[in-house]
Image (cartoon, rainbow, N blue to C red; front, side):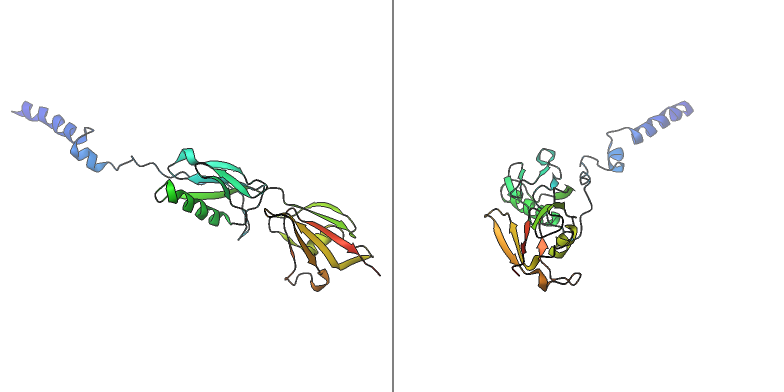
Length: 210
């Protein structure tokens, strides 16, 4: 009888630990659901930063690896996204862009998609300043953006015959060029309220007529 008991004990332990038994299945947590991938690593954009042409972004659709994309916004501010085609994202923050892509995927393709849009790299953020300025040329602005007075300072300030009250800013847009007539004499450096310069702007400072 002692031998029979000894033989039964290992069998009992084996039944408790053998994979596939009811006891072992209830003790092991399920791992069949894949964890969502970590978002792409991007740059640290200023608060409220809006995307513009040339910016590189990554679009991730959690659980749908074949829908991931990484590219630059074209000159019109559009990005080509799988299934959706060309989407206009310029002028949106990354969070707003994610909401936009989520809305479009939800219409016809996915149920409750989880989407992340990450700014990977800034595009070229250049502006041109010409006319009565000491160092006319092309300049690179910071991601935080600049106003007109800061642009003038980057170009060495006005010449002695400049007319700050007669500045023209030409801006390219999807609907065609926009022309702004700006009186910079109304602006005071550091006081806000100035004209904001955008990437691609061409600024021309007129000559004084006196």
